[in-house]
Length: 89
Image (cartoon, rainbow, N blue to C red; front, top):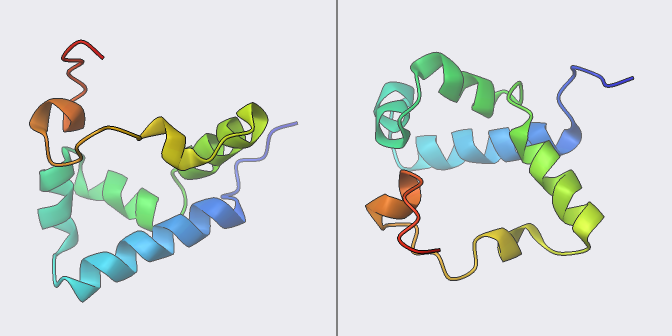
């Protein structure tokens, strides 16, 4: 049976998001707006309640690749990549 509790991976990634955000002196509302989520959704990422980080880790592990492989060749600053536009990829 699947648990609803955040995994250690979800918690660790969330802590790192929060630390980096505070190191850069960006507020939660500012970052939420930048990435296109609500303040509440960003809070869920930071406290590990959004379990997508752990799920992506599990998928990569099952495929025997690193998570970085999912992002190779993508320019994180390109707006089409951030918004899900394929641009032929």
